[in-house]
Amino acid sequence: MSLRALLSVTLGDQQLLSTPAELQSSWAICRVHDLAAAGKALAQHAYPVGLLLLNNTSDADVEAVDALLEAHQNTQWVGVFPAEMIKRPSYRALIVQHLFDFHTWPIDPARLNHTLGHAFGYAELDAPPAMTNAGKSDMELVGQSAAIAHLRKQISKVAQASAPVLIWGESGSGKELTARAIHNFSTRANGPFIAVNCGAMPASLIQSELFGYERGAFTGAAKEKRGLIESAAGGTLFLDEIGDLPLELQTNLLRFLQERTITRVGAARSIEVDVRVIAASHMRLEEAVKAGQFREDLLYRLNVLPLTVPALRERKDDLALLSSHFFKVFAQDKSPRLTGFSNRAMQAINAHDWPGNVRELINRIRRAMVMSEGRLITPEDLDLTMPTNLSNGEALLDARVRAERDAIYVCLLSSGNNISRAARDLGVSRMTLYRLMEKHGIKQPLYQQ
Image 1 (cartoon, rainbow, N blue to C red):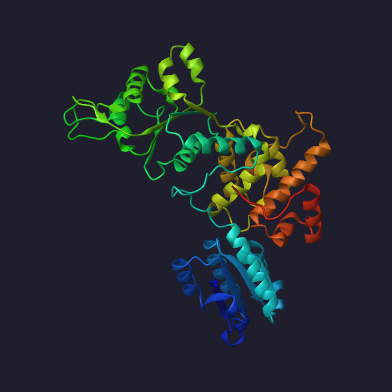
Image 2: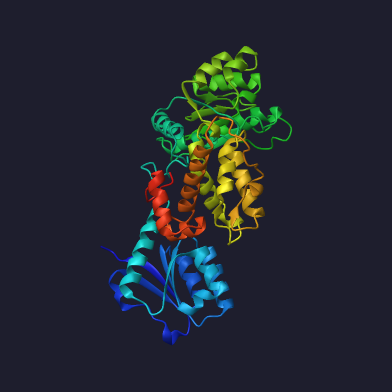
């Protein structure tokens, strides 16, 4: 069995610092003695675990270490400090904001090796998902609710077929993410994925943009150009907001779906194109057909494999997981001292109806991460109001239980399943956190899908 990679960084009085020899049997250790060398080592190799050995360092040194750890958050860091240094604010901030765990001098090699092994386990849990057979990453549909699980199951089935797919969902619910998941799990995964927003493209340009044009086809056509349909050959063409496509273009698209050929603007010959079409709309196309705004025969051609993306209000069980996920995704926008969401923030998130769906959630969280001045995001940071009553008839006790459960869930995910750090963020002891986890049926480790 190959040794696990460990980066050991020593800073301070070098005569007092040394990596225990007992670790050599378990770890492939890269030893560096300054932060510049540490940064270079991290740039050249992904170390899942880092060991900080600090002694006789100044506050300025610790600030430099803080900057290094902020830039390399994917590494799980374990620190070793002089016991008296823990009282200094700079050390305490470093521990709370960046470290998986810490020890004090003198080192107990057995205990330290156990901590490093624990950190390595969490680093593996936090690693990117494995690659699929098609060479693409797993579905980026975060959530564990019944609604999102059902959508994943449908995507897995639809991806194996070659027929057109029609996705319906409210604005901001994740229709393009669903289309990309279908593409990534299909046999066309190694081909291009071309997304076209039919509602954002000027009507006068849609024809030439979709089908391409020949040289001299119109004023300004100095050379021939492949259209977006041709560019998607061998892959997937995603037509977002297909309901906004002008009627005359709907006729051309129908002909392509029937004959699998296109004709460039100004051309006399047809070109055969092998591409799978996935369309999406926030409006019900059946209603658009009745209103004379959408061709019925095109609807039948597109609606071979229909999928519905659930609105966020239909999957509120995912709010805590989604909030933690986006907090990690946009971590570069936040201040180092911001560690997660307050209980009040999670109550406000659960009470909000989310008319803008996941897109609205992302925008509110990103704004809160930039504007927050505290250690935890508040409802005010999110520009949300606390619920004054429970419109769904939910008892106050049930609301408190849900808020408590969500707060625990978010803190555990934000801390990388680190019980000590999550307990500190919640302001409770480790034993109290274990008791609360048992009360709510929360088991470790927590996974993000």
